[in-house]
Structures are given as structure tokens and as C-alpha cells.
Image 1: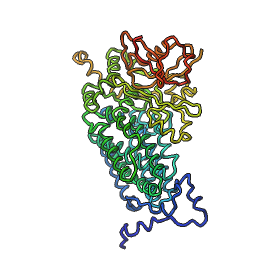
Image 2 (image 1 turned 180 degrees about the vertical axis):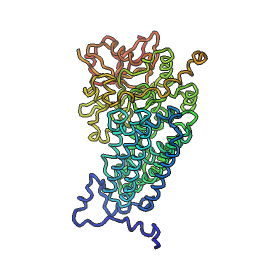
Image 3 (image 1 turned 90 degrees about the vertical axis):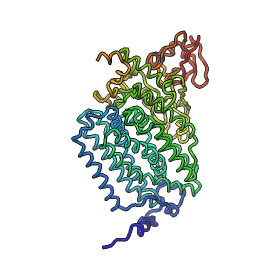
Image 4 (image 1 turned 60 degrees about the vertical axis):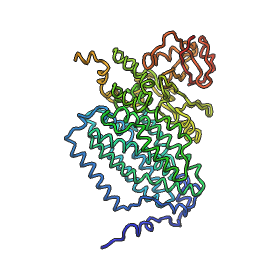
Length: 499
Length: 86
């Protein structure tokens, strides 16, 4: 039996904005869930998704994707790549899985909100597939690391991280709760799919896939590419929603949602992806610096898309460009220094050759972050490892939930952006972080950072051990230097010669 | 005499840190308690320099013998610890 080509029936079949008979439109699409913003059902019906697919097509393609990724995994199982991989690469995988896998389920709920409550039929249709995508991403990114749980307990954090009060997990949860779990359907379309997925998922997944292939980890590369192809499709839900908002004079509101989502996403990626790309990935496997990748994949892409749609660059764009040179170096130094508080083993990434690379990519690195590393290296060299470990907490930003950092050494510029609101003193890592709070203080004002919890007496005993217990970091899970300080040999020529 | 939390930024360091001080502490003691978490950890000491406490936002530098309880700080007030000649 011949069937009609998709383009001859698709638009008609997904035009499902029927007039409800048994309930009112407001009961069917409550504003707090739909976020129609006063735009009529008829106008939302004009939403035109750029990527059209049908359920049979979707199932066939997804089956092929799964078969591909699982086959590569099965074929390479005996290859034991993980046994011989650089420890920095292992840390990359552990950090990635812990920060991303379970959040995919949250993304599935966000897609479900659009699938049920968006007033745009095209959005509902695409989100139905998006919902299935995200469930697949959660499953596959839990299944792959599970193979390695027998190697050490840090791998178990792929599942465990989001169920703890570990500081990085709090930061990731705070961002994803904000964008995925507590927004109406149109807010999700714009903040999650347009702002976060178009740019930042690209960075995490395309960049990591390239680095994985270069590092010889074809299992991880195929997994990541498999996920990315879904993202490339369902990330396209935000654009048409933005067009409708702009046509109805809602530019300011749309712009605000984008500006908040881009900044918040950037900050999380500055602590997660920045250190991975510029410090953990073995030098010979690095394709681009984090900054180069950001400029190519996010900055250029966002600028073009925003301007094409009739939106503006976020007001903080100059600050964003400046931060690309700076923030992730501070995050890396902080994560390494407070390494017992993370579920992976941070790679220092500061051998003389790596420092040359950092200086080339970030001129001035040696006079700034390098100065702090000089002291750390000196301590390790002279047998004072206790001075390379923390005895107090870094102050955590009330928006990003990650430490407040700046440039050290000759470029010293560390700044705390404070705000007193309803008698409480808040601290932020940047002007845009503080602005995100000021845009909607009701949404954020009750958030307690890890330091707030410490000061409120939630952490007992009030020391590092108490903090580790509070963060559910069990013995055998605490982070330590990825290479067990082997890289220090480069700074000890006399000992190296003796060996 | 009571424990009092402040946030400090040490000159040439990269991060803001939580430092528990006492309301009876002098500014020199505040600087010393911060230095414990920074000097010879991420920043080298500077010979011939003393450490002074400065309000992060207003830039006011406090007298070295002033006590925390007299400085009018809010809990988690942010302060710079800077190298100075005297």
C-alpha cells in the first residue's frame, strides 16, 4: 500500500488546537504552565517548527542511533580503553556523567511540560519526541558508566551526584531547576532549548566528542555524538516560540529570559567544561582551547541567531567576552585546591609544556594563575602537601552556586558583588549574576549556598570532614590529584635523573 | 566575645574565602587569620610589608588595632586583606 509523503499530511495531522468543549481554554492550558503571555491559541497555532518528523521516522532513526552506540560499546568492551586511558580523561568522563546523566531526566520533564501545556501544536509535537530523547539520554549515560563502577566508586556518581548536597551538584541542580523544572512551557522552550541547548550543549557534546575521538575513546565519542544529534533537533523548539513572542511585542520579556539563561549556563560550564578542555584533556588530544571553542560554537552562533531573530546581544556581552579569558582558570584552581570535595580526580594540567600551551592560548597566564600554581608546586616539591589542601570554604555565589573567583597574581581583580535584600546580605560572582537575582528575587531569595548551610549549623562537625559527610562523599570517593602528582616529576629534575 | 563570620579577599589570591573571626579580634588578627589560609599556600609572603584590612566596597582601610566589634560589619561582610608599607 502506498503512503502519502510526510509533507502532504504533516501540517494537517499536527494541527491539534481544537476548541475545547468540556473545559475552558484556561483550564486546559493554565497560564502558569503554558506561559502563553496573552497570545491567542490561534496565534500560537502559527508556530512553525523548522524540523519536522513523524513517530515512525523518529523510532527508526533512534533505533539506529542506539544500535550504533551500543554496538561500539560492546565491540570495544574487551579493548579496555579505560584501563590505559590518561587519568585526566577518566576524570573528564566522571565529571561529565555526574553532572549530566540524571539531569537528562529533569530535561525530560521539561520537554513533557511543553508536550502537554504549550499552546503551539508544533511545539507539543516536537516536545513529545524531545521527551523521549531525554529519557534515552538519561538511560544511556547511566548505563555506560555503570560498566565501570567495579573499577572505583567515583563512577557511581553518574547516578549519585544529583542525590547529594555536593557543592557542584547543588550548582547544577540550581541551574536546571531554574530552567527546566520551574518554568512554563514557553519559558522552557526559550531558556532550555534555545539558550542552553543551542549553545551550551553543543559545547559539551561536540567539543567532548572531538576530544574523546582524539583521546582514542571511541565508546564515549559515539555515545556523545548519539546524544548530540537529538539535541540538534529538539533545540530548535525555542526559535519559533521567540518569533511569536517578538511578533506580539514581547521582546523585553524574551530577551530577559535569554539573558538569564545564557549567563547561568555559562557559569556552570565555566566550572565543568572549562577545566576539562584546558586542563584535564591530555595536551596532545586538545583540539581547541575552551575559549576558542566558546568563541566558535557559542559566541558566533548566538550572536548570529539572536540578531537574525531581531533580538539583541545580552547586555553583559563585553563582560562575557572578558570572562572567557578568566573565569574557568579560577574555577579550575579552586576545584583542584578543594579537590577532596568533588567526585572526580582533577588533573592539575600545569606541567611546563602545559603551561606553555596555557600561556600561548591565554597570554599572561603565568603571571596570574601561574603565580598561585608556583606556590603549590613549591609546596609539593618541598614536601608540604598539607599546604596544598583547604582548611576553610570558598565563598559561593548566590546565583551560580559556585565559588566567587577572579584573576590572581599581577592581574589581581577578585571582586564580590553584594546586595542587601530584605535584610539579608547576598554575594555574587559577577554583575550579571547579581542582575539575574534582581530580575526575580522571589525566585531565588531563599536559596542557601553551601556556605550559608555551614553558617546555619547544617554541617556537623563544622570542618572539612563534616562538609564531606554533608556532601555524601564517602571514603574512596573523595577527589585527589588525577595523576597522583606524577606530573611533579617535571619540576624535580634531580629526582628524575636519580630514577 | 563571639564568633563572627567574614568573607575576605587576599591581595593576589584568586578566591573569596570564609574566615571565622572573633568580635574581640583586632584588624591585625583578622589579617593574620586570613593569611593562614593564603600565604605560602597560593601567595608568597612579601618582605617588609604589613597586612591591612580594607572594606571591599568602600575602600576604607581600618586602623590596625581596631576591634571587629567596633567596625560596624554585618555578618559575612566582605573585606580585602592587602599588603601595605605600614
